[in-house]
Image 1 (cartoon, rainbow, N blue to C red):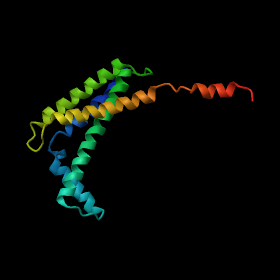
Image 2 (cartoon, helix red, strand yellow; image 1 turned 180 degrees about the vertical axis):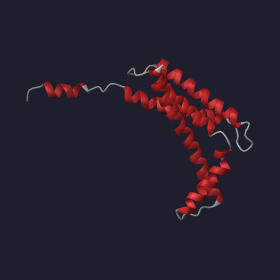
Image 3 (tube, one colour; image 1 turned 120 degrees about the horizontal axis):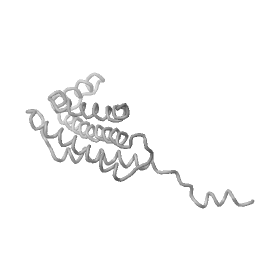
Image 4 (spheres, rainbow, N blue to C red; image 1 turned 30 degrees about the vertical axis):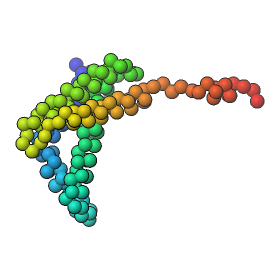
Length: 156
């Protein structure tokens, strides 16, 4: 039971944070208002269209980031302390990511100030895929180049 809590609780908590952000608090009008206030506080005055573009980029970057984090946490949970990377683990984790992203978008369809988009599910899946690629690269054993080993064994 401790193992399940240790590995899966962070996944559940992070997924709950993502789902909680589905409401009006994090809709585009609110986040653009926050962005305008922050920019104003640091002395930057941007046009409404510039703030809208910046808000859009930040919101889409947040999709990539929050689902990359979910995927990394899910991979850690599926792996349960084992080393390495397997395609089976990656596919299970990607399925978790797609399910949470689809649920998030479905719930957004019930919020009047939010829109539900298949494109956002795809973007979320891209964030998860990027995380898996990074995990795969980091889990690869370091291999020495054959010529560097040959050069150290030869007498000078």
